[in-house]
Amino acid sequence: MKEKINIKNYEAWWVDYLDGKLSQSDEEKLFDFLELNPEISTTLIDSDDYKLPDLDVKYPNKSILKAENNIDYLLIAKVENQINQEDNLFISEKINTKPEVANDYKLYQKAVATPDRNIVFKGKKYLKKKEAIPLYKYVSIAAVFAAVFTIGYLLTNNVQNFDEGEAPQISFFSIPFNHNIDTVNRKDEILFRQSDNYNNTLFVANSTEKEQELNNEILSKIDVPEKLPLNQICKLKNHEMSNDKQLLAYQVSKMPEENVAFEYELQYIKSPKENKFKSTISKVYDFGKEIDLAGSFDRLKMAKEDLFITMNE
Amino acid sequence: MKTKEYNIIVDKHADGLYRFILGNIRDEFKAQDIVQDSFERLWINHDSVEFDKAKSFLFKIAYNRMIDVIRHDKRTNSQSEIFERVDDITDFRQAELREIINNALTKLSEIQRSVVLLRDYEGYTYEEIAQITDLSEAQVKVYIFRARQHLKNYLGKFEEVIK
Image (cartoon, rainbow over all chains, first blue to last red; front, side, top):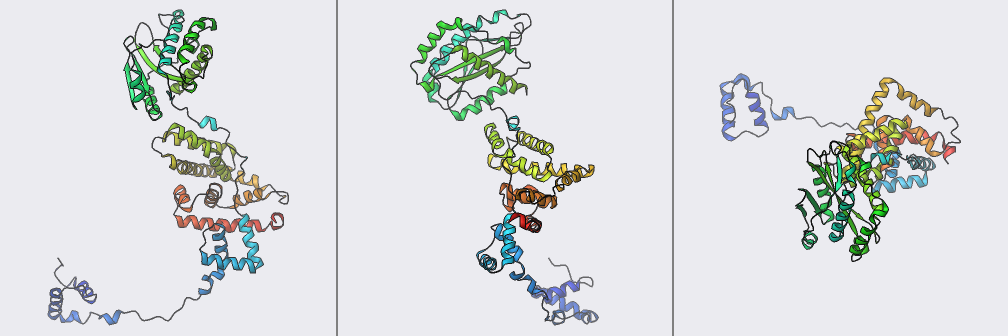
């Protein structure tokens, strides 16, 4: 609601009146007020009084605003490929007819910084981050279990030299052969399986989309506070595995070459006295047709080193 | 952005970023530090930065970091030494065009140099440059216009060489 007209605000009412913003009733109030205060009405100016006179003044330097005098701007716009068609026609004509404009245009074309591609950042490899370990894409569950069982058997014979009182122990263990292969292969999801013997969990992902998620899941659960004794993880000798090699070869021979895979589970016990499993890590390798366990273990060791470096970073 | 994508960004843009910073401050070690710091920041934020925005994010971080370094150097007076070293080149007849342009770049103001390098080295649009440098698009255009004029006038002195 408009404030009641008084001696302090009558000018605002008057301006509104001149601007045609007053309602009929407000106009009546305004003129009633002016009639009651005739000395005020003489001080008010009418709308005709405050109209600005027409000025017959021209901008004196209009000529310098014309395109003719903005050659540099247009040349740069052309070099920058930011020129419209009309300006482009204009400046192109100038370039073709005026040598000094053509020369400037040539200079502008050259005045573009080009990177020296021989300069490279040499520390790129140090900038990169290790990707989470992929599980598997095309895995043969049978080969996986066979391999795990074999390795578990082999390594079990090699961890007995550890100092059972204090030293951490690393060993592989077999996984009960009770997984439903069809289920694993069909379902596009992460399956968590509980192992009966070791109160441990086997993580299985059967799609590439789930690999990252699964690895994050696994890595987030890992709680390895100390560096593992890598030199004690794998102590296999070639001659100890000849029979097992046959076993693997037999299992694998039924699989397409590119699908041959191998998976291990690492069981880390901080101290036998605590009898507490600290982590389970899954890893898969594609080998090709022949499985060389000795070579495989080298790769296994490298993978573990990578993993532990990642975890300790 | 996933780790794999982050590594792709390293492969694709580490060199370009390095050249951009080096083009601005002409100090290999500082440029390497800035690149390293910038990628570290990108990595820290990689979960929240989308892959297609990563390059702009990276250049913005690097640009701001570079400005900090330049300001610090100005306080310690080492910046002038860097540029004076470039001015030592006297025999321009033997210099290649790139070297002349590089010299010309050192004559520009910091902001002019940055916007021109972002434009020429990386092909950024005015809008993208504005985002990286926290300028308005109009300001970017003005800086590029002035920079081009300076570069052209500088090149004009060596017209015989660059013909």
